Structure formats: C-alpha cells, structure tokens
Image (cartoon, rainbow, N blue to C red):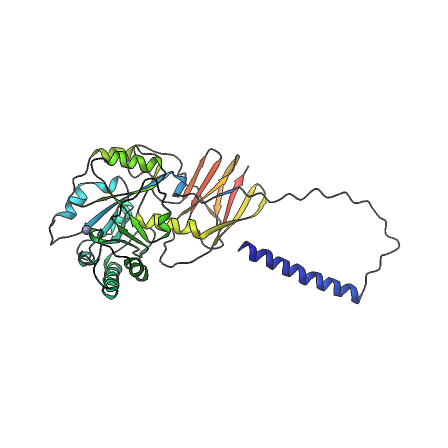
Length: 375
Ligand SMILES: [Zn+2]
C-alpha cells in the first residue's frame, strides 16, 4: 500500500513538473528590476516523521499468553448424558472464563440459551450434526456434513458470539480427521477446525493463520502443562466434556492468573487474522496528537470484527486516545483479583499503559485513524 502511494506521488510530481516546464516555454517569467533582494535564512532540516507504532502484539491487550476453554458434546438431551445442560450450568464454569461451547447441530434447537453469550462472554461452535465419525468418508459426503452443521447453527443459535452471528468454529468429533476436511470446513465458512492433535507448549500460535487448531486434554498434570504454555507465551486450549468432574483448583488458578488472555476460539482466530492482514501507517503530528492510519491488506467476510491491539511507544502519554473520533477511555490495564472473568483479560475495547507502551484495543476498519496524545 505504501509503495502504491509513493508511486502515485511520483506520478503526480512528474505531471506537475512537465506542466511547469511547458508553461515556462510558453511565457517565461521576467524578473522585475525594482525588487530588493533579501538574504533568505536557511530552512531548518526537515524532521523525518517519527512513528511510535511498535506493532500488533501476538495477543489481545498485549497479554503474554492465551488460554481457551472448550466443552464438546453439547447438548445431548436424548443421548448418554441427558442431564448435561444442568450439569454444565451447575458446574459454574461460565463465571470463571469465556467458554467455547461445541454443539451438536441436531439438538441445538432444543437447548441453546441466548444469554450465555452475553452474560458469560461465551461462543457457540459446531461439533457436527450428530457426532458420526467422518474420517473415512469421501469428499462430497464430508462437505455435506459440514454444510448441514453450519446451516443448523445459523438457523437456531440465537447468537454465536459477542462479535458476530457467524459460526466459524468446528470441533471434530473424536479427533477423527482426514486431510481434505480442512478444505471442506473452509468452503463451508468455518475458520477454525479443532482436532485433538496435541498442542506443543514450545510452539507459538501462528498455526492460527491456518484453519487447523489443536487442543489439550487436561489431565491430572494440568497445572504443569498450563505453566509450560504460559512461560512459552503460547496458546493453550483446555477441553472438557459436560460429564467431567474437573479439578476445583483450576478455578483458583484462573482467579489468580493475571497474565493470560482468556479467549474463545473465534476470538483468537479473528484477532490472528487481523494481526496478519493489518498494516499501520504514520500520518502526522499536530497539537501533541500523533495520527496513524490502519490498512487491511485482505478481506474475509467470515472473520468477525473484533478489537485489535496496537502498541505505541509513548514515554509521556497525555491520556488521550481516539479511534475514528471515538474516545477510547476504558482502562483495561488493571487486574482485579476479586472479579470473575477479569475485565482486563477478556476481549473488549480499551487501553492499557504500561512501561511507556500504550496498547490500544479497538474495532477498526480499512482506513480507520488512530490518534494518540503525546504530552
Ligand atoms: Zn465429542
């Protein structure tokens, strides 16, 4: 984009110069004889524009690692676990962190409370139509399987997430996976397809640029496992089933955990998309305000509009941030240990100012303008 602008600039300069030369040839300007010549002060050297933009950090709100929690096999009122919905609610998982709820499309119309999304910052994903394993199926059947799952999700799920009504996450039953499933899922409109291939704590989460997601089954060694992900600044996903009795210490771990982004699958997938497809250009500085323009280098109508985090190095911040003339005044830089679903660790718009770095998290479009105060 920058190259295009420079080239366009050169083209305009070339056009202007050729016009000027033509004008000179037609009527040369004569110097008046009575003009007094005044020595001209040399101009100060032109200051190069100084961008304070540091980049889009790996995780929302400049947090240092990410953790999701997803529940498969929801709901199954006629299946092996008829009391699942009650068990699910009774366990109070919702109040601790956002949950990605993987639904059987077949039953979604019977149980899909709309308040879960808004009250608990959760997301509905698909766990196929009826949990039949499709690893051995042909391409056409597999594509139909995804399409059916998607259609019903769109028909019956009252809300998919805080950000969109488009269902983009799919958890493969039993991890029964074949290579062309990725293509089928993508064609259908899914943007994350989870299998139970093990996540590796030493890898970063750039795999999110692709469709495939892996997740953890958290056993008795969950604390050691999660701490390994945390110290490696990785993305971890905890999988449970509704009938599971989960270690109560996990909840106190979450309550006291201050450094991770507690996300849903769709949130981290869409954030990752923006991180890879967004560039930022310094515009100018005026009245102690630096202006920057956002450019999207790609488009995908399945990707939700989610708050993207932009980091700026600002030793003396005035306290002002505007995005497209909206004031961003929600402080998401302070951890409140007594609050469940910590506001500074679940995705939203706001700012965080820490060690001279201002992190601005905001919904942006192509050509959005971010303005930051530099006192
Ligand atoms: Zn399952």
